[in-house]
Structures are given as structure tokens and as C-alpha cells.
Length: 423
Image (cartoon, rainbow, N blue to C red; front, side, top):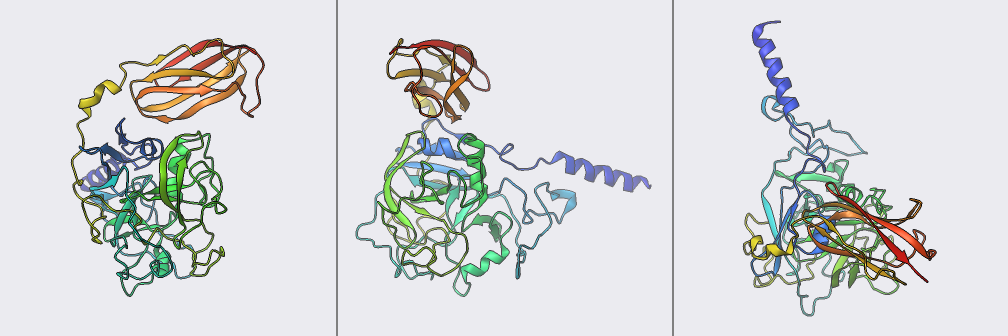
């Protein structure tokens, strides 16, 4: 082998090995402790900050998918051979690869903390018509939100002359593709559900759209939450008590599976279907809503009604708040406190301090070490925390009186204490 060939081979091999695949494990997540709990519990591969006034969450993301796709650029092996790239794979008749490739973006959207509904808006078939610029309430073309994994969420419409249903023929295995250099979703994808599976492993064990235990895809710039086939607590979509509009949206309190109230009277939409079609397959009187919302439900404070008011930006509407102003909200060390009351009947509260964000497990055992119940098993932000136990086991059944142990475990802390349940 010639010396020049050997040197080139070593260079290319070193370059390939030096690059790290972009995944849920290697992406950067930076969510401030004072950001609303919804973002702390469900988002990954993003940076989130509260704005100066507290009116917005500034959500920063790069639009790179944290998995493999043929839309990563493999063409220039000397500088951009990418471990996230895989060869194109057809998934049906007419399937094709569009000519664009993924380039990392520098996006931020400013999402109102307490969005205000538009007055007098009716979201019906005349507004949700699949055609560009037929309503002043349409989202802008292009980026309108962020998925849980930091991927861009696009408007449900295609540019005039291009039928949005035809674009699915260029989707990758995660139902995404780039427009220009921006990789994005219009529709359901297992990508955000893999975030839920990672952050809530005891809740979400299946990342297949349509059958996951909990299905959240992301949030739009105006505050509309994009759901799948479940409500936020993991239950089936409640069509009996809440009527859908033409984009499968409705308004009610959004409460998590552990009872956390994330939003009050929040409009959200559901993308829940088994096929992409213009037919009314679920019998709700509208064409099946297979894509992200077309019509914006909420105003954006101080920015009017312009169709351009809601796209991704290079800088937020207002700057991030300075975290140091309320730094006392973060404890200095890990602490597990004695439960109170103790002895107790029927409930007791366990307080604990987290000086850093991370995964937290709190479990109750009987005196013989048998697991009775997990009280929390999730990723949590730093802060002063508490959890309540109602003296039931994993099946929701009452336990016997006696001595019990409770243990907290994080990446950097482990401690056990005793408590007494009396009848």
C-alpha cells in the first residue's frame, strides 16, 4: 500500500470513529428548574428557559433527529461522514428520497405560558380545508412548533400546487423529511414517543404510534399541545365528554398519569389514525385529521394576527430570565426527610431535596424487603420536592399495619428511612 493511501485511510477511519452518533443519550438537554413542569417531564434534546417577564417559555432546538435516517448527509466522506446516516429504503410503491439533507439549525420559539384564545373563532371544515392562505388563522408555512425530541414540527399544509398527502412518499422510517435543510414532522412519529419511553420507562413501554401507553408529540408556538391516541393521563381520548372540532381539537384540563395538573383549560389536538386519507374514517363528520393543526387556536401576546407571527426564530420574543435571581429555589444537597405524620393513617408525605436534575426513584418496601409500591420513577428537575403515599400497594389495595421502609435513589444519592402505618 502506498504511503499516501495509508495516510488517507487512517485519516478517514479516525474521522469516522471520532464522530458520535446523535441519539437520545448523546444529545444535550438543558431545561431550567423554573420552566413549567410539562417541559421538564416530557422534553429532551432541547434547551428551555422562562423569558424575562415570565410570559413565555423560550424553547431552543436544532431540528436534528436523534436517530438514523437517510436524510443525514453521507456524500462528503472526508468531512461529514455521519454515523446517523443509513441507506435509503423504500417502504411502498412510489416511495422516494427527496434531494435535501439535514443541516443543524439554530431555532427558538417563544411559547406563551398562559395563551389567550382567539375570540369568536370556529374551527370547522371551512377553515380546516387543506389549502394555503384561505384563513387568517392559519399557522405560517414551515416551522410552527417543536417535537419532544427537538425535531421541528411543520404546518400541516403544503405549498400551493403540492398535495400534502403526496409528501408522505418521501418520509423516512420516522415519518420525517427535510424541506431545504430543515428536518421536520407533519404527522405522527415514533421519535417523540421514544422520548417518553426513555423518560417514563415504567409508564411507556411501547413507542408505536397508535398503541403507546401515552402519546405526546410536541407543542406549537401558540401553546397548542399535539397529542396522539391518548389524553395526557394515558387514558383513551374522551370523545363522550368533549366534542372534537375539525382538527380533532378540544379544551379541558390536562392532567398527567400521576395526578399532576400541567395545564388548565388547554386546547390540544389529537393525531390518531391508522391510515393517511381524506376520508372520514372515524365518523366525526370531518376528513380524517392525519397532520398537525392547520388553524391556530391561541393569540400570541403583543404580536397580532399575522400569519408570520408564529414561526421559528433566531432569537426569542423577549430574552431569557436570569436564573441567578431566584437561585435559592435550588437546594444545596440531596436530602431525604422523615415522613410526616409518622405514625400515619391514611396518608403520609415524604419531602426530599434535589440539588440537580436527573432520574429519581422512590419506592416503599415492607420490613422483609418486598417491594410494595413505587411512588415516583421519573426524570425530575432540581428543587424542593414531595410525594404522598396513601398506604396502598401496586394494585391499589390497602396494606396491613406495620413498619415500612422508603428508599430514594438517584444517579448520585441513595438513602432509606423507616415509617409506621397504623390502623
